[in-house]
Amino acid sequence: MANLISGALENPLLLGPPNFDYQYFQALAGRAFNPLANSFDATNASLLADAALLAYAQPAFATPWFQKLSSRPIVFFTGDSTQAYGIIGNGFVLVAFRGTEIRNIRNFIADSRIDSDFAFANWKDDQQVHGGFLAAFGEVWNQCKSGVCVSKFLQDAQAGAAKPIPVWFTGHSLGAALATLATARYSADHAGASVGLYTYGSPRVGNPKFAQAFPNSSAFRVVHNHDPVTRLPPASLGVRHVGVPWMIDASGNVSADPGLLDGADPTPLEEGMDWLGGAGGMIQLLDHVPVFYAKLLRQYAIAGGA
Image: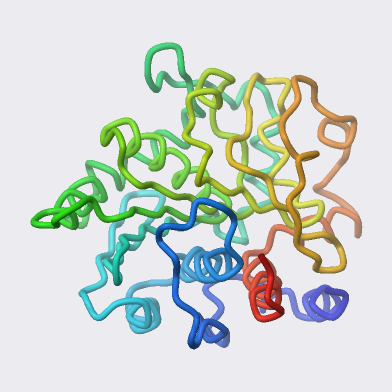
């Protein structure tokens, strides 16, 4: 991990997705995605981290890589502020949402720490979610510019199937928030469906009622060390995390971490640390970089992780 950090500090421009020199899905040769896994799976975590990273790219670059997962056409969804890709694989359907552009992460963090910039929006019954995330979600779920939206793509993917095909969602940063909303919406609209989620560097998305109603059984939230975005918006605003937490520590070790489950109170680190300035802030921002999630989870999968 130290080599990744030192290299990034020497040449920060190499950090930003899409990472054109990264070999997507290469570590998975001979390893199949398991669409029926309902526990954390190292191969699935690596593959979906690559998909979340690749979702930052435009179709000309992303499509050939995504075709390593499927011979079917890759579908691109686009809205004013985000984009996503749809893949119909062998026994699964995958939607990968794009996250926050690296150059905008500092603004994202600054905005998320200001109470007046945060507003809840109604989701369902007494469930509420981050209004900005909900607006971005709507751009690709049912009103996207590209014609076919995610909801219609998922409906078409299931058409004619003898039994429901497992659906998986993934994303990094903002893309993780959108994947979380997609999981909640699809699960609510398709009772009994097989739905899974892997998020990387996810912010908090909804209020406690949303978190309590969320289908957590096959939802996994990966946090890289001190990734600051995972502590936003602050818990003091009444926002909670969802999903089973897994940690990548400073040495690159990967493990389940119940300590990352949200409590009612924010930590001093969450509320009091200035992530926007100084070398320490830069190091913490590096923990949010999506290619680090992808590389470290690939190493874990190759080493025979869970």
